Image 1 (spheres, helix red, strand yellow):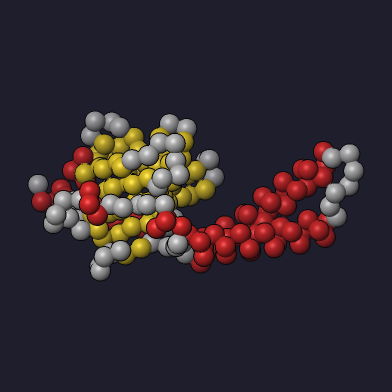
Image 2 (cartoon, one colour):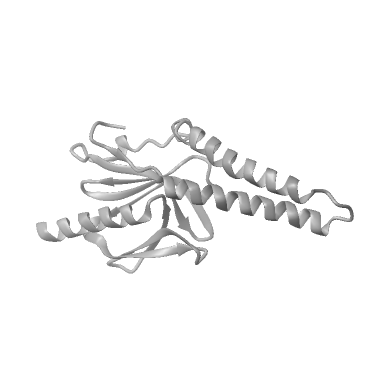
Amino acid sequence: MEIGTKLIKPSLKFRILFAIGTAIMFSFILWLFDYFSDEKLYSINSLLFQGIFFGIGFPYINEKLAGKFPNKIGIKIKSELDAEEKIEIEGPANLFRGMEGVGGKIFLTDKKLVFKSHKINVQKGQTNIEYKNIKEIIRRKTAKIIDNGFRIITNDNKEFDFVVNERDLWFEKINERIESNLRRV
């Protein structure tokens, strides 16, 4: 990451909600196995303990590995930018291409929004959206529940659905760049 680039990380509120959601989902899945099993697999205490342990442990491990893992899977963008173009903000993201949520990183440069997939996807590559080509940006929910997505609609009516940490911050920063681009025109 070059000097002046800001990496957007999840807030404490997001991390706590993620841990609670993970604990509930894990406990529910274990309960389903227990419910549909012919014999009793888990006690209530066991379900609660495993849910809490997994709910705290998984997000912690995920956070510790997240900083190291993307660098090893090859997200390189610098060679694909213009010589004078600078990355201002970056963070992990998913871009929906059809049914696949393609994992990678999103970058805001001084000229465009860039999504670069990591190598562990079926669909790989880079998506560039120049600010002058953005008609509208809309907040959206993932699975109609989680406030972590936004949709970019371009002047030619193409839609790009992203999932990011700190959606409102990304929304604000992209809108700032769209407005500053309009002032330059």
